[in-house]
Each structure stands twice: as C-alpha cells, then as structure tokens.
Amino acid sequence: MNFHQAAKWFLVIASFAFYAIGSPRFVLIFMMSVAVNYLIGTKLSALKKQSSPSKKISVLCGILFALGIILNVSLLGYYKYTDFFISNFNAVFGKNVPLLHIVLPIGISFFTFQLIAYLVDSYRGLTAEYSFLDYLLFISFFPQLIVGPIVHHGEMVPQFEDKRNWKVNWDNVAKGVFVFTIGVAKKTLLANPLTANAQSFFDAAAGEVSALSAWWYSIEYTVSYYFDLSGYADMAIGIALMFNIIIPENFNSPYKARNFQDYWQRWHITLSRFLGAYIFRSVYKKDSKWRNYYVATMVTFFVSGFWHGAGWTFIVWGIINGIFVCTASWMKRKNLSFPTVISRTLTLLGIVLTRILFVSRDFSQALTVFKSLFRFDLNGFSVGYGISPLMIVRIVIACVIIFFMPSTHTLSERFKPQWKTLIPLALAAGLSVAFMGQTTSFLYFQF
Image 1 (cartoon, one colour):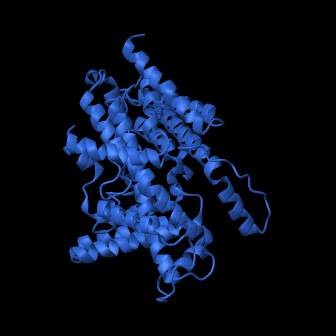
Image 2 (cartoon, rainbow, N blue to C red; image 1 turned 30 degrees about the vertical axis):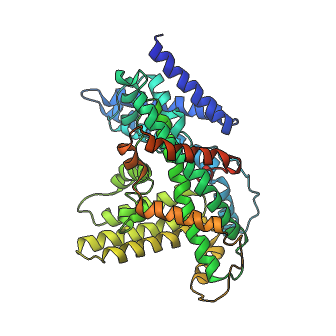
Image 3 (cartoon, rainbow, N blue to C red; image 1 turned 45 degrees about the vertical axis):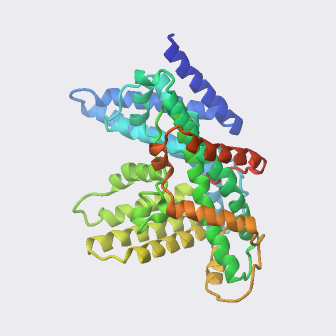
C-alpha cells in the first residue's frame, strides 16, 4: 500500500468514525448499504459496457437496477416515513396502530440520493469502474456526509486520483479556513440566535397571535434558515478545500432571486441539480402532452417536498413551490415580467409564506400564522421572546449580508491572504468561539 492509498483509507475510516459519533446504531447498516450499492453498481457498469448485450443481459440489468433502487428507497422509507404511513393508515381506516418513533439516522436523505445517482448512472452506462476505496471515499467523505452539499461521483472521484491534489496546497488551506470561518460565523452568530427566537413563536403559536408577531418571526425564521443551511455548506466546502477537494457551491444569494425559477437555481443548488438530473429528466419528454415541462416540474417538486419531511405540510410546500416555478416559466415563455423591485419583492414574499408552511407543526398552525399576518392590529408581541436590541442588530446585519454582500463563493474567488482579510476573519472566529456554547443542531439534521 502506497502513501496515497493509506491517506484515502485514513479519510474513509475517519469519515465512518465521524458518522458513528452522530448515529452509532446505524453505522453498520450504513456500511452494508454502501457495500451493496457498490456491488450492484459495479455489476451494472460491467454489463452495460459489453459491446452487444443480449436480451438476457438487459433483463438482468433491469432486475439489478430495480433491486438497488428498492433497497435504497426501502431503507429511507423505513427510517423516515414509517410513522407517516402508520398515522395516515390510522386516519383513513379508523385504526389505532401505535407509532414506532424510529430515530432518523443523520444524513440518510443526503447519502441515499448519492447512492441512487450512482446506481442510475451505472444503469445508464455513465460510471467508470471505480475502485472500492474511491467509491467509499466518495460516499463517506465527512465534510458533506450528513447535510450535503449533495456531490456527484463524476466530480469527486477524479479529484481523489489527481496527483496535483496529493500534496499540501497552502493556498487552498488558507482559502479553506476563510470559507470555513464564514460558515461558522453564519451558524453561531446569526442562525442559532435567530432560529431560537423564531422557534419560540412557532412552539407557542396555537391560537390568535398579533400581526407584528406573525410577520417578525416568519421573516426571522426565513432569514435564519438561510444562514443555517448555507453556514453548513460553507463549512463543508471549506474543510474539503483544505484537502484540495472542491465541493460545488450550494447557495448563490437566493433571496436576490427575481422569481421562483431563479430562486431554485440559487437555493440548495446541488439538490436542484440532483432532482433535475434524476427526477425531472426521467419524467420530461419533449413534445409530450402528459410528460411536458409543467408535469415534470410538478412531479419533481412533489418528490422534493416529500424528501424534505414526512408530513403533508412538506408535500403541499413542494407542490406550491412547483406551481410558482411553473408560473415563472409560463411568464417567461409569454415574455411577461414585472420590474425588478416588484419581482424580487413578490418572490421574497412567496419565500416567507412558503417557509411558514415548511416550519409549522401542522396545517392548523400554518393557517393561524397566515391569518394573523393580515389582521392589521396594533398589538405588540403576543407570543415568543420578542425583540431585543441585539436581535435587531443581528437581523440588520443578516439583511445587509443577504441583499448587499456577494456570496461566499464570490468572496472565496476574490480571497487573498492579507492583513485586511485576516483581521475581520480573526474577529469573526473569536466571536464564533465565544458563542459556541449556545450552538444548536443544524436544522437539516431532522431531514
């Protein structure tokens, strides 16, 4: 074994150990799932590369592919959706089957998509014959393992084999620290306190609430969700860069979007990329009445909503997003548009309203908040922690970053290790460490 292979094995072992800390009871099942997917994918890839495959081989490929997809979906379904199906069965048939309250393994939604993408590409004959070690490292690479970004084997494995990445690149280390620190600051200084404050409202909002409460906390949660998700993405990208591995950008100033089609090209970019490549393109067929753009879009967003959470609120959230995307596409085809300020304002309003549905416990709570938004009363904060001067400062800083600052990706491209960069970076790092004791789990851990 040479040094390069030893280094990869070290990363694989470290990654599985990292995962075991978060989901110790699931780590063996995770390892078995990864191994089975590799065996099926490798066999599919070998069969597809035959010059003239027979009908028997084609049938075998179909069986193997179906088996792999069923195994992955079943594993995800058992852990994530069992209680959802039981509760719906009870509601429809008037039964009282007890819920199992299965603990959701960390990251299962993310690595399942990566495993499925590998199987689909193997079935399509698009995968190379990766070594088991490279495949293990692709799936388990710890920076992106639990909350993404969702990476693709075609962009990761070649980087593992690129000899230029086999030695320390101090420029990448410096840039990685820069991006990682931005992510930590987003999470600890903005996302955590804003989420805690907004959650205090959604935990208590059961009856009538004031309009001021509804608007403040809904906007606050919308802002905090962005900093929580993009903060983790920045940390993952920064850590990977220290290993000379480039993970794709996941957020590109999404709240500057002109419409929802633009928004989903900026928000959780790697998820949109996966859904586009493996759901949308599987449904869409040009010049087909029943498999046209709008049908494929709605199916894609139905899957997106159900992927995000085991509840009808998530499904409806996905459907509404799909309708907004279809509307934006239709307006583009008809050459209809609003002035930039109006289009961005309407898009942001749509994002806030759909986020309410996303974070609410059920439809009843979501409806309570929706109705409260338009009560136009003069009451103050009826529910929640309320406004403090520090919270106002955080909201102002967050909005300045969202609407007036370039994305982290743009900042990293401009990055140069200079004192004028080091000083604010050290300040952000110091403040982040100071507030580290108040850190909470990432919001996407629940998915």
